[in-house]
Image (tube, rainbow, N blue to C red; front, side, top):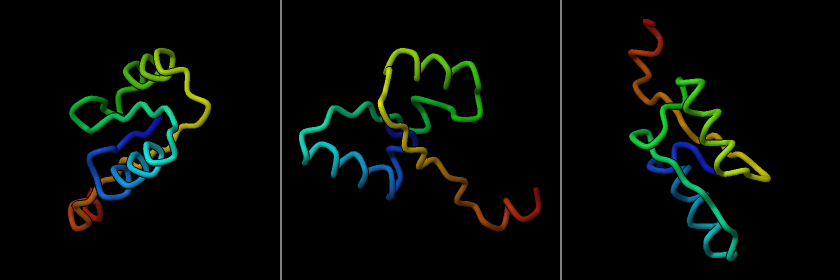
Amino acid sequence: MVTGAGGMTGSELVRQAQQKGWECDAFTRSELDVTARDAVHSAVEISDPDIVFNAAAFTAVDAAESA
């Protein structure tokens, strides 16, 4: 399972997994809000992954520093 699958790191993780023939449930920001605990819990329950790669990130560095 990969969160942040729409970003650079996440999309590369998904590409590599697919290239190796691994089953990979991939979630973009619009598909899974990683700040919504219940949504993440449901996604993990449904996917039942062996591994979770959290590649979700907040990329607005200036905004992150002022938050």
